[in-house]
Length: 113
Image 1 (cartoon, helix red, strand yellow):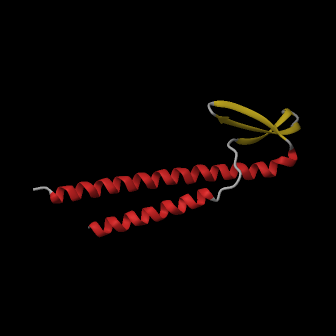
Image 2 (cartoon, helix red, strand yellow; image 1 turned 30 degrees about the vertical axis):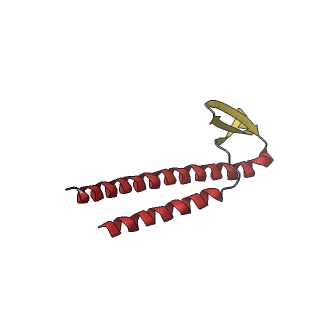
Image 3 (spheres, helix red, strand yellow; image 1 turned 90 degrees about the vertical axis):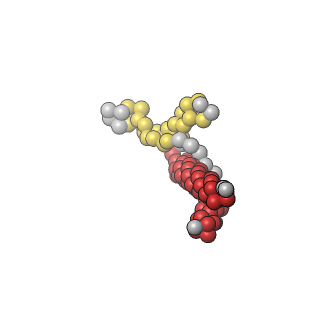
C-alpha cells in the first residue's frame, strides 16, 4: 500500500512540475472581456471595441483601436490559460497534501503500540 501512495505522490509531483513549466512558458497576458459596442445601438452604427476588467478591486474600462484587437484577443486567451493552469496547480497540490497526510496518519497508526 505504501508503494502505491509513493507512486501516486510521484505522479502528482510530475503533474505539478508539468503545470509549473506551462505557467513559466506563458507570454503577455491581460485580464478582461472584449466587447463590441455601438454609439447608436438601434442602427448598429459607430462600432468600437471596449475592454472591461477588474484589477486590485477596481473596475476599469478601456477603448481599443481596431488594429489592436487581434493582439488583445491573444493576451486575453493567455490570461484564461494562466487562470486554468493556476487552478490546476492548486487542485493537484491539495490532492498531494491530502494523500501525504493520509499516508502519515496510516504510518503513525501502524507504529502505534
